[in-house]
Length: 258
Image (cartoon, rainbow, N blue to C red; front, side, top):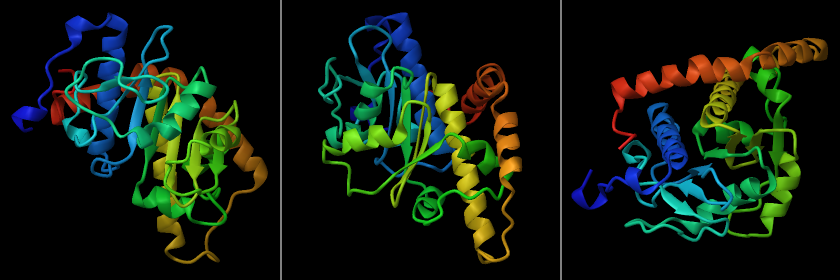
């Protein structure tokens, strides 16, 4: 990383709760890069800062996801205005989608939005995510859709996006655009995205052989799998998946907690 992009540690300048949020958010950026889901400097992950101020962490514009650290994250308000001194700047347009969800959902502490090849491919298919894999059936009951309205620069779109997501679902396909998940924790938001992206990848691979030969599961099986997949998922994610992901980052892409 060039010297002018290396962040000065802010650990001693923030609360312990904010520092944990910063480390978790930096982990998310690194994990997205590790899985090959990043889009250079484009797309965003945001994390609510604990406390009453309605502040959020987002990536410094121009920094690649594998470079991001806890200290380099920029703290902004709901309007995307920087509220803590930082040598970096952000792309305010990138916060349009995130601010809408954070403002409308108290449980949406973390929002991940991606433009992967397979995610965009499925978002461009008229039938959406099909019940053709176990992974897809786990995802589908939590999946919402939002019609494409162009690059997310229009603040008026926020109201429609929030309405489409609703109050119960935490996973979304943005038609012709990409994927989105949210969660109370970084661990849950990431795990939802992992399942959504894998389901999309499986669908693209299955449909490469043609639509007619692809098996869809009956509705009763879909409901059964959705119920099975939701049982204990949060506990497994927090206790087993997230610590495992941290160990993997520590081995392969350390430095996120600087």
